[in-house]
Image (tube, rainbow, N blue to C red; front, top):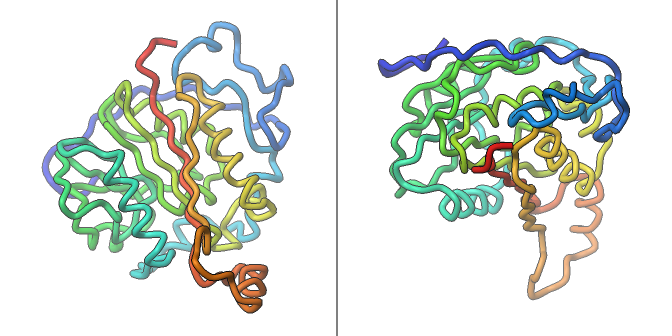
Length: 275
């Protein structure tokens, strides 16, 4: 349910449900995962599944709404990551745009000097979202239970997803919805680091490497007809630094305790051309 200022987005028609039939851990070329020939050229249709059943599984099977029942008013990445993300938003987002902050929290990391026409937030904890000063309105929804967004088709210039993509169990459906709500030429920016709630991340993410996680998000875009070729932005700790990392830094990084968080973003646009 949308919370806040007056205008409530109209629900869009229900989309066909994907079959949960098994698929390989990468985009499949098997006939079982292929859409019908009539769907193959439809913009926004899901061309193939990315995750196998085990790749969607979580160590903690409890509903995500239970896990996020209490607000966490903390930042989940460090200041360097946040600065890189805000700079990227400053470069790619324009004043007056309508923005959907998907899987948001009490902060959106948007450039403070940029005024947007509307920022809609989504998340799993209403208290966190209510504390976010950049949101004009927000709604609570568990995307692992229901992927459809009660938002008007073609209504957003940008969709953002910050350090949360690792928790999606049905990313193909979610990215198809992202495509649907974007305007032609609209941008989707998915950012992440190496941090996660390990027990709530999907298997394909938990067991992956930094490289494979970037490839996974790239495939989420590839598997929806109509997104442009994804662009990858990386900013790694100590890259270009004036002094080499200490042995202690190397050990900490080995155990996921690096002094600074690596920054990754995968960016794609809804194609202007009809597909």
